[in-house]
Image (cartoon, rainbow, N blue to C red; front, side):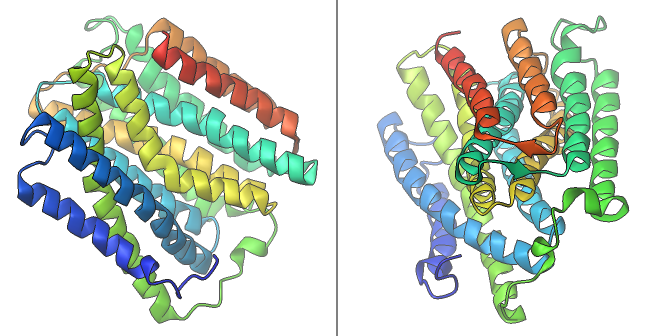
Length: 366
């Protein structure tokens, strides 16, 4: 982390993002207040501050992560990013008219971006620099098994149940699948951090804490929290502004675009962290970050959104259309093949990137 602790921006930007978020809300321009042009302008300003803050928050998160060591450090960023996504989706679900497919599109986008985009960039850049990179096959297999089970149960199965309309769960089914998702993810975290910790750590380099005073770590943790809260509030404003702009210009596939935008915004810190790890020849750590975020998104976001749906009575559509389901299964199959051995190359990453570009293209040309 270049110059960490010496930059004034690393201390001021998280607080600035938080102040900007509260100022927007106090101004009456938040989400659906004020004129359309004014909301779009505020959204653009919020975007600039948010993207700048993301990089600073990433440095603070990595400082904390390095201090606590792997795989606990990965979980710091994973839980933080998942909290961001849950907050944004739930707040947008409760804002305005009911949008039953927003959660589905956001979770689907998160899985596709991580398993094809982020993983593809990591494998390609790392393989190009180091020719071949090693991974811990037991750890990646554990990620994939959990990801496949959660994905099929929550995004594919609803299309084939018969209790309600296609693509939806009944209240009993939704509660049952949500509980199973939380239990499975909790079991995975226990295996990752306690029972089979060695399967998720490549070598011993990640267990060495950085030489930072405990006071600095406390400050980093505090600024990380402030920055994340600010990003949550600003991301909500940015997503709502994009939704307003798409509606104003009558753009089709608005749900898919907004869902992809939410996923991209909240995954930015993890994506950068994963690519950095790959370029430092720490591919397993990069995969832990990327695949961990996908597992956490389904294992925690879907139950949280389901709870909000059941409490508010707003409908929730989780089942994917057939084209998206095929693309999702393709991405999971490629991950299974890519991580079937203990080494990867740049060609492995290019396959993932091709699928990612296909996903992006089909958002705009379904």
